[in-house]
Length: 115
Image (cartoon, rainbow, N blue to C red; front, side, top):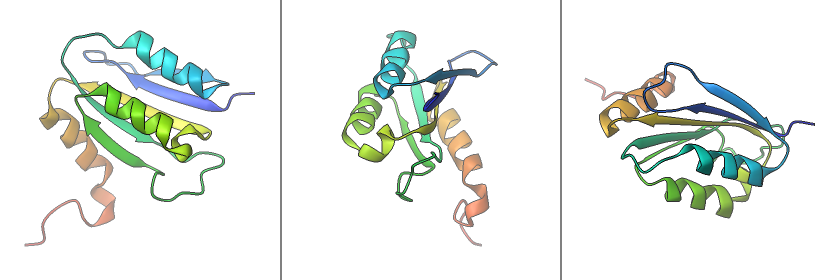
């Protein structure tokens, strides 16, 4: 029974790796095994899950250069440990990561200043 699905896009790769897990701890361990010390910016998004009741964390986008911030959020926020899809993408700069984050929010009506 698959409970977690990680979509991981490493820096410099055109492909997104999709891996399925049964335990949340295995998701974290897998991510830790993939990262290296090369400076990069991470875009993390927790997609809608089977048991997600919290609209605050559903589809929340986090952009940071510190992977430990993402791990802390994943461990300390119960909703992030619930089943569902997780997206982790690596970028060379904040500009690249924020461009993707903005594109992900274009349909909200809040993506751009009103003229």
